[in-house]
Every structure is written in structure tokens, then in C-alpha cells.
Length: 240
Image (cartoon, rainbow, N blue to C red; front, side):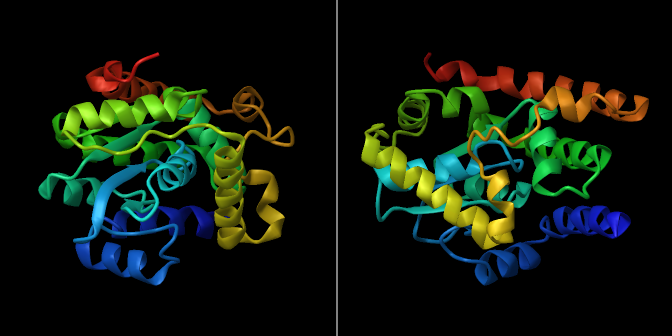
């Protein structure tokens, strides 16, 4: 079963690079959570899983209701399509140590080495588009006031006029509810401990990585070098 899970995950990420497959996946999954680029798309927000995708989508929808957003395909194809159409595009990124530690808890049978391999494949393939997107690092996006600053940087970068996300109690509650609904949709109530929100039940990255093999640590080092390179491109545009 573990081999099948890891093989299926790699097959999915590879197949999503194909335009036809990516389109079918986006059109057959719930339109509220996974969507491709279309003539209705106002912004594209995508990144490796567990990098703030759900929060960013929910916060954007809360601040800009009715605007089309393409997100959650977790495929370089989405970034490629966005750049081709010159759409405002936010590329989310997170330290691979943290992103993969979160992902293997969301998908417990996925091995760290496969998660790291997919992280590297994703960001190596989007690297060619870095001059055409806004790179947003996970801590900058989810901190207090962070997504408002991200949208401000997006407006500066692309000349857009998106409304900023104001963190009222009502807005925060609505964002949390959308994230919870999305997680349940993907895996049912049994996945409530893996919501894309802080959770005391979740193991820390240090706990997940404590038994990592030498091969996994070497892969992590490579992924972190890639993370540092991409993060340095234009995350400085997002104020602190």
C-alpha cells in the first residue's frame, strides 16, 4: 500500500504537467477549491502543497468576493498558463523541511523522500517563470497582516487593484471555515487533524525529521538550497 501511495503521488504530479490532464483534473474536482486558468480568472495563486495555498485562496476570496481565482492544482502547468496570459500570479513557497513534514502528516503513507523529490520537481520547473510572478514565502503570508501585505505587493507588481484582506473576527472565522470545509472534502472528518491551520495534534517538523535517513537529509539539503534561491528572487517586495 505504501509503495502504491508513493507511486500514485508521483504519477499525479507528472501527469498534471500535461495540459489535457491538468484541465480534466481542474474541471472534475470541486470548483470552489481547484480551478484552472480561464477567461474569468483574475489571479493565480499556487505552490507546493502545505505552503499556505488554502489560507491564501480563502483570504483572497474573503477580500475580493466574486473574482475568479485559479489555485490548488499544485502544478507548474498552472504557473505556465498564468504567465502566458500575463495574469497576476502569486507563487507560494515554504521551507521544504516544514512543507514536507506537514504533507506526510496529511498523507501518512507518503515517504519524505518522495515528498522532497516532488518539491524539487515543482520548483525547478517554475524557476523559469520567476521574473513574471510574485514569490510569497509561507511565514510572510500567514503572519498577522501578512496576506494584506502580499496583496499590496501583488498590486504593485502587476498594476492590479485587489482589495486588501482585513483581519476582522468575521473574516478570520470565514477563512477558517473554508479551510476546514476544503480539508473535509478531500478526506472526510477523519482528516480534521490535518487542517491547513495551526493544530496541537500535529507533530513538529523536528519530530518528523528526527528519524530521517541520510538520503532524505541529503535531499532536504538540495531542496533547501533551491528554496533559498527562489525565495531571494522577489520576496523582498512583501513588507514586514
